[in-house]
Image (tube, rainbow, N blue to C red; front, top):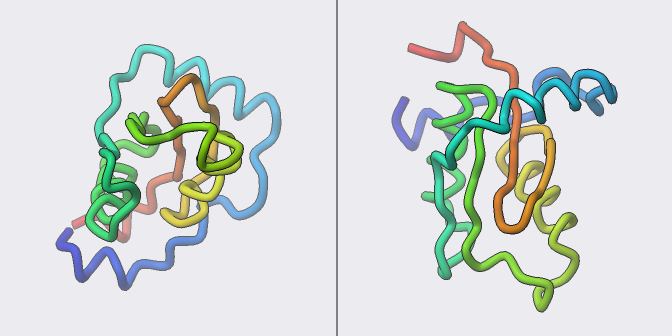
Length: 112
């Protein structure tokens, strides 16, 4: 899916709302062995980074993102991670150090 197509997708988290505790715990367990598929550098969260995170979510559903510039100086790290999840249309699962775990259930009709 190209960059322009990613912009046209409805990027509300799927399913809507908050995930229940048991589901979130299971996703954390599944994410444990994953390696980050996207790295956010010192340039921060650019449009290209958002597009790549969305692309990876369409492919994998559950991903890790390494955020090199995620620091306390820019505010609460967990809140920054939650904001990222909202911007990319995913559920925030966890934050460990500079690694954010995101989840968005795949909608088969979107993937081509």
